Image (cartoon, rainbow, N blue to C red; front, side, top):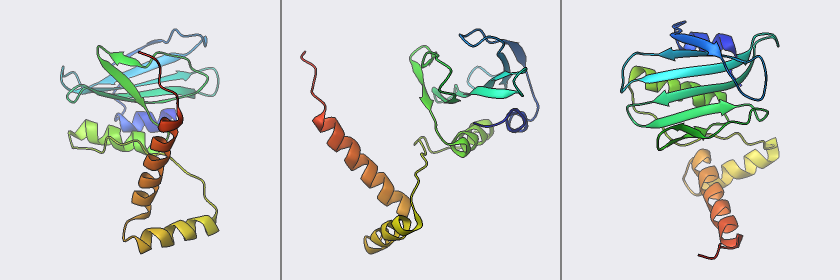
Length: 163
């Protein structure tokens, strides 16, 4: 999870609003940074000022493209709805969130795919890099193909609900 300091640097220390954040965890506070444009962007952070400023949630709202992203602490149970018809895309990698925010802030195009981290031993990494090389694709592309195949395989095993 990114820190309050990283968030403040991300929003250039521009805070437009702050309030208590009323959820099942008492004492949280939320800071908002909005660029003031209806089709612009806003970024939010929810943290506990009494618990070493522990961050529970950061959100990015791209109103121009109707996209919303967040990093969320598993202890926080909140709805996935960002605004009418737009759900949050939950991210897992801090840098993915930061890169999306920087692009949203500058109005640049950005990758809407979600980054994930994987843990491989050095020997496993070497094997997979060799396979990618043999197929003349990047390691990231190989991982993407493998994940898509695994998702397809698992979804085929899940029983379909009766309509």
